[in-house]
Amino acid sequence: MSAAAGKLRLGVVGLGRLGKRHAENLAYRVPGASLVAACSPVEEERAWARENLPAPRLYGEYAEVLADPEVDAVWLVTPSSLHAQQIIDALRAGMHVFCEKPLSLEVAECERVLAEAERYPHLLATIGFMRRFDPSYRDAYERIAAGEIGRPFMVRSQTTDKNDTDGFFVRFAGTSGGIFLDCTVHDIDVARWLLGKPRATRVYAAGTVALHEGLREFGDVDNGVAICEFEGGKLAVFYASRTQAHGNDTHSEVMGTQGALAIGRVPVANRLEIYGPSGVRAECTETFFDRFEEAFLVEARGFVEEVLRLRGGAVNSGMVGASLSDALEATRIGCGLRESLLAGGAVVL
Ligand code: NAI
Image (tube, rainbow, N blue to C red):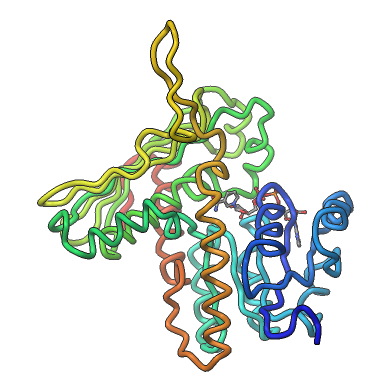
């Protein structure tokens, strides 16, 4: 019997900055998973896979993964502009799909994916809003569900990256969708998730280029703020930045009628405090991966467990992670923010 027998056989697609991390998780740290294929059009990335992964079949083209009869599910970590069509192609090939966020940079594309997915109710398709799997965010969600802060009515949430002098995200700006669809989309999903999925009614965004002039040609900014109003008087306030001096400082707060919760407000790398002549300090998380490494792993385990449950005859509850319709709403709000930034003024959704 092969080592993959009974396991979920996965093909990871995209071996860039984040794809390599997902591939290592799937290959070595997720019970029930067998990483049997990896795909990248870039030879150096395939060479990395040859060196670092347990001999999956390597492909240069996505179509080759879809044609592989030994792949049960694809794990898409490709540029955001490709996600929608790649999800549709995977479903048509009979494969379960995990896809990194955002679902798409355009609402119409998201709708196209949802319409197609309805035809394949036995297949799981989920979008990688991994904060839902972070233990502290999860704890907040459960306390809210248990009524600990009364009625939650407002979320204040930020995604801010350490300044990258190499300018990776400037080169990436053409396919990222801009700061709100790339970064704030996480905070949007967190707000909807923690506030009970209210429908957004109006958004307003503003931004500035503090350091990275190269973003202007893409109509993008390196610091942005936004307000989102929801039905029922619920609110969210967002901040996104690419230029923090201290590190990746991603955190959220939830205000309720009988209390509030703050999730990771001080972005310490660990529990060490360093005492010296100039005071007491702690190191900061450097990158999003340092902050959310555990969330990515729990997310991968959750997906594999869920597909194995489906295989065992369970009904597709779509309960693992963000559903396609959650991801559509996140893109709808993100697009509204992009429009508000470009046009000035509030946008009614
Ligand atoms: P990247 O540019 O480093 O990697 C993209 C990968 O896709 C590369 O391996 C590239 O060769 C491959 N690729 C490009 N075209 C392809 C095609 N036609 N078929 C197959 N592979 C193709 O980008 P990065 O930073 O790894 O981001 C990838 C995705 O992950 C994006 O959608 C991004 O939004 C998301 N992401 C999510 C994060 C999170 O916090 N959940 C954090 C960082 C990225």
